[in-house]
Amino acid sequence: MWTDRDLVVERYSRSAERGRTIYEFRTPARDWAAVALDRIDWHPDWVVVDAGCGLGGYFPSLRRRVPTGTLIGVDLVLADTRCRFPDVPLTFGDVQALPMRADSVDVIVCAHMLYHVPNVPAALREFRRVLRPGGHLLAIYDSVIDDQRELDELFISSGGTFSLNWLTNTFSIESGSDYLESVFENVALFVDSPAMLVPLIDPVIDEIDCLRPVAEPHLAPGVTWPDMLARASAQVAEIIAQDGAFRISEHKGVFSCR
Image 1 (spheres, rainbow, N blue to C red):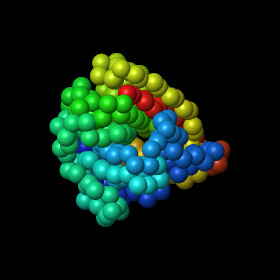
Image 2: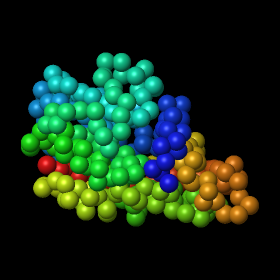
Image 3: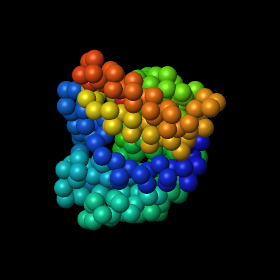
Image 4: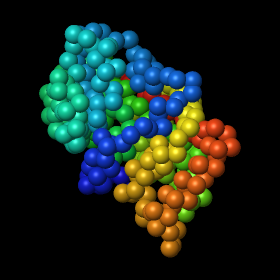
């Protein structure tokens, strides 16, 4: 499902075009990247790899933590990332075969990416291979059970037949420990439950719409994708009119591994 490379490229190639997102509306406001990254003590000279860096959302926070170190981004879709962060070295690569020598990296950050990987154990062995002795892996993921459950409910009540969370169930807070403990000696999980109060319709609908490549096959018979989005928009508009915002609950986690 989400491990098909063409679908992954299609989904994330649209990210640069998105306007405001639901993640701008965490209440109270918080820098989730900082919360996640501060699970370890940083050294300013470290070599850090953001594996599956996407558009570089973690780059500013990482650069603040390694101001004199080396920050490298690895991904399969990098054109827009190069425009946004011309000073960060970027490598086109597959995490199942990282283009880096053994024992060369101090920290690997891996956020919301392993559920796109056909062979998760192979990717984790690669992380272990390139990390120096004592190096850290920070794996940042969500709960497959109840993260953003309001979007699941919205999708299903608007014509969907499938939990959106289960699109990423190959690696989550619930399943991650078994994968990680087979490769790393020390695995600790930090969990957090922020919430977003979104006062606008478009960011909510866009969050569902960006999953179209894999979610559309799970519509009820006779329901088209535009039908579903229209129904969802009407529901969100009604909730915002009544409550002032559409609430989205989160259940997030950070695995710190050595």
